[in-house]
Image 1 (cartoon, rainbow, N blue to C red):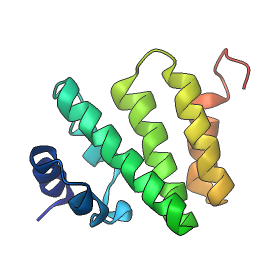
Image 2 (image 1 turned 180 degrees about the horizontal axis):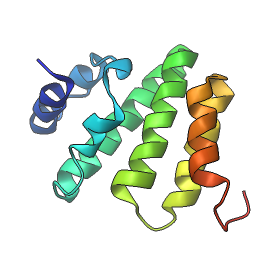
Image 3 (image 1 turned 45 degrees about the vertical axis):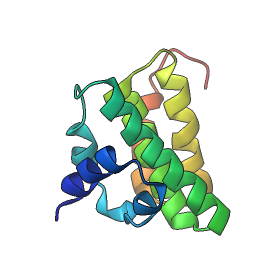
Image 4 (image 1 turned 90 degrees about the vertical axis):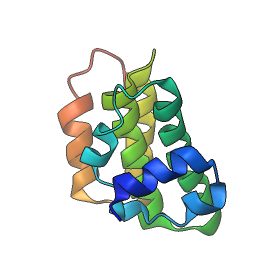
Length: 121
């Protein structure tokens, strides 16, 4: 079963235990793009699945997972949801990813998306 199919199942179950079973590293940016424009309920539920994963990893001290989850949240807010203040919220999570891991992927995400922003970061 693909990660998109797993996420689609979660959208219908609303089961936090099932959400915890998903390996965060199985989720790619293209998987998140799949849910763009799918309606507020689906988009919001995907966001809260990511936030649930964030809290779970934070509570268990799983820094690599937490870093990647922060990166996904940043991307999802900035690219897929784009709510009011999305640049500041997404940048917050982008910085969190670097707090938990010094991975080049996270540095590149910040440089490519937030260094030219007019906001004072």
